[in-house]
Length: 204
Image 1 (cartoon, rainbow, N blue to C red):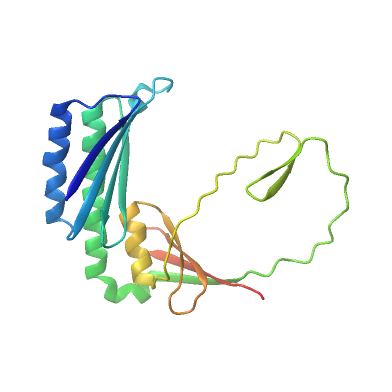
Image 2 (cartoon, one colour):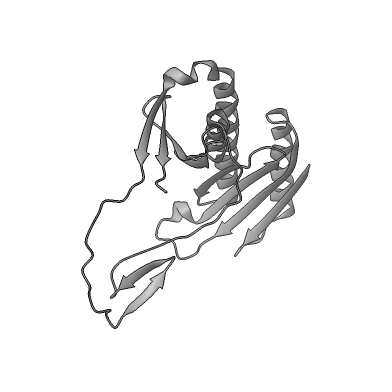
């Protein structure tokens, strides 16, 4: 298993690298087939909150889904320990969920949405002088619009696999293509330990 430690706008001491390695090697007992672990430290001097001065992101790459955890603190070691604790929690939750997935049908709330846009008669307007395009959207004027666009390589997944991926990246939702129906789908976390699923019926 390769352990890669990097720093952005900060230096990483040999002692800290050794600490990181000693902690990370224990991950192999939690998850099999680990190939590479990337630990990135990022320092920000301009933050208003001193407790967010250092951010640590741990990315675990294996033959299965990518696992990621992150944390912020005012100290490199503290930020790493917090991120590492979150990583272990995410791995254990995913493992526990796989053990109990036999009751998955009763714990899921499923909703299907027909993705047919309503018929709206668009008004013809003259383009404004400050018109520009952001991620495929035409923006007029200086309105407070923030668009972040990302693309990911993906393969069709069944529901259990999508839940695993959501748990392992530590998010509250996960977008995927259902392997059984081919529909664009989103699984999301509800109250307690329940989950919900939204399937889109895409109109031709």
